[in-house]
Image 1 (cartoon, each protein chain N blue to C red):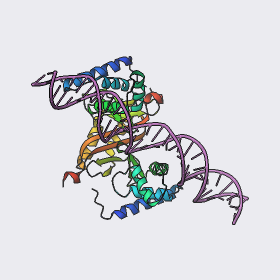
Image 2 (cartoon, rainbow over the protein chains, first blue to last red):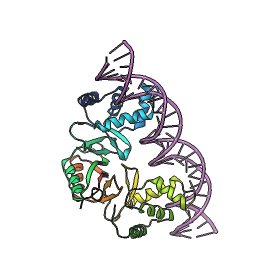
Image 3 (cartoon, rainbow over the protein chains, first blue to last red):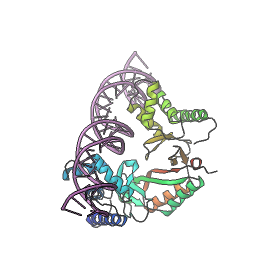
Image 4 (cartoon, rainbow over the protein chains, first blue to last red):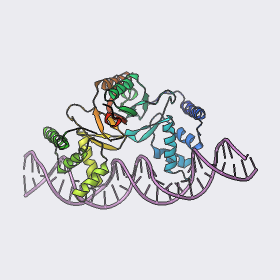
Length: 154
Length: 154
DNA sequence: AACGTAAATGTTATATTATAACATAACCAT
DNA sequence: ATGGTTATGTTATAATATAACATTTACGTT
């Protein structure tokens, strides 16, 4: 459970950030991309590509899988959305400008995927890679479990 | 590239470990499970379920997907194999008794997935989870990049 | 405004990954 | 040997993702 006071603000802000970033980078924030991002942000949890597709089908006839996957690819490449590989699902990025190494605390109860950007983890991963003389291209860190809200912790 | 001197030893040892573990736990290390594990260990890199299926088809007629997936599920549940979610592939575990939090350095060049079991990372992950009052069930950490061999580092 | 090009989307088809559901067989404790 | 449990066989299909090519749209240049 995510306790934003007004979730419509979360969506609006995410769309605005995306628009700004695309403007700044000379990229096109098209209608399809906007609608997909909007659907990704309908909750703070991961959403599946085909759920996006189904919801777009209600609004736009004849949306097909490649359209959705292309939009998701675009959004992912530009750090606006992250893919959660262990769920085959996608989640909006709350701070697309800060950095790209975002880790996730995924609650298997309520479904929320909380971004968790921890320097210690980044450091530890970097050090391990360095020790192995390994050159990092991409890091996927997905922590599944139960969040504090669902555990009833206060 | 993995530089084991005699790879057939790697396979034999993995099969022996699996047998011992199953014996100790009262589990059945059946023929299907043994063959699947053997194929997983044919290299030190990840292998896809359908590649296992294809290879078994050469040896045993009429092996079907559920058979392979069931064996992989069994092996994964018992820590003998890990699933690499970012690749939809499976890799043998080199020390199935030690622990279950194994991280991977996956070389996108040679395909090797090196197990990398680093306490600092475990700690950092544990602390972050604790700070978020999050109860961990499962951690997936997959680091993709280029390994020292492929980079030509000495 | 018309043109040309590149980028995005539409469209059809299919590839890849994974599981549901039920039937049969093998194992093993009594 | 019998009965229950676990594993496998079998058929079908679900879920996830992409290839390939056609068409449209955006947009700078003339």
